[in-house]
Figure: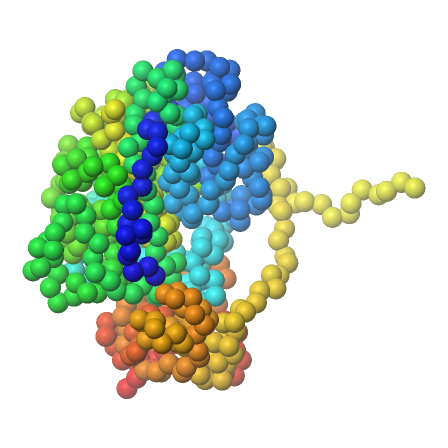
Length: 456
Length: 158
């Protein structure tokens, strides 16, 4: 563990501004034998290039690309080593250079970070980020084992072979320390299943009450099935460019003003205490009274140091003073309801110990102060792991461009995936949003990226 | 000389689109490396932790799970027996474990705080109902060890 020196907290900077011009998705399903991974990636890429009002045709676009970043979590699931080479070839990008990124659940965020670094440095000026996951080749039980292989196999995986159990340990401790009503956690699940109902891409939409969530079967006490993310098959693509290419391609490029990463121990067991790293909207005074008595116990089992670190760097990089005021929408990595509450605190939406207020106050809802996971998130819409962090930024891009309705409300989009647009569909387009944030998260907080996208 | 077609075939699980079963049956020959001493210790009823040997290192406490190199200063660590009594820091009962779990569904998982140890090792409760702050003591699977972290468990201390 690092005791912070000045170099450790250096605020990252881009030598050149980085822009996002287009995004594409497939729909997300528990099982998707109709399409192999190559086909899914091409489908998402085609949506990005052909349905985002780009000012060039697909053939012209192909000639502009000079680097590609691939994003897949688990070779176990795909059962194909060097899958990126297979997909790169299938997409017809050979002989361009490419790289595959792997940081667990945060793979998508890290892949976008790697692409941003390429653009910001001048190494490349037009970079598709292609993410996917295929989690349907094994049973759910084996799938959970595979995911638990991303815990420490020597000392922790044997204890349950189940990631939900590792989050449940944190949830129990968080509840013990902060006495959060179970209903508050359940509200997050209700919200995200509900927002998933308005998305044609979603895998697990549903209209639930908090009672439904709490009465649902328990995976690992206290988390119920409806409070856990889905296991998905699908793909997502985001296209990053420098300023010149962005304007050649789009009349509505959005600026990726920051994307930064943090980490913490893979094993929650190994998390030692340290002073709280304060965000721009916090001071020593923030924790003088509330956290008294145990502020030395941070981050413990109930906070994600990686998220705090990523937010600290990204907020300083993008000039964020107060996330609640400065962001108009947010996508979190709601792998579990408990991790969402923890994240609210880590990224400064409420001080530590008071994360529940973000959902209880209504702030997290559409038309609240900071609408969160309007996409349906990981609980309602998808967690095709390598695609997830990219999916979040695709949804954010469309929101900033005012295109939520086009991609979620067109009956033809629903028909494309064999679905019928619900009669009570409603638009979740945020009114004139200027700036958004997305958190991509791995393990029990082993890697986290914080991305900030805004209107230039 | 003509070569015959293979005699083993892939089982078809789906006709349209065509889907086949790719079998997986081999073992990985995993080594615990320098951490093997910890697992051997469990078989002998010993809870072996490590401590940094660098006198200038600020972290004087024990590490459990053990590390053979210190994350704070990269110096070698020494092996020291950890206390076998501690308290439950957090717990959860796993109802739907993943494949490969060798204990029954419903086994309580626990994180244990031990005096003088800077970590909170994840383990399982072999007997009793877990509660916050409950005093527990270590028990060891010495008769027929699994040679895994499951050879360590905890029971109520009283």
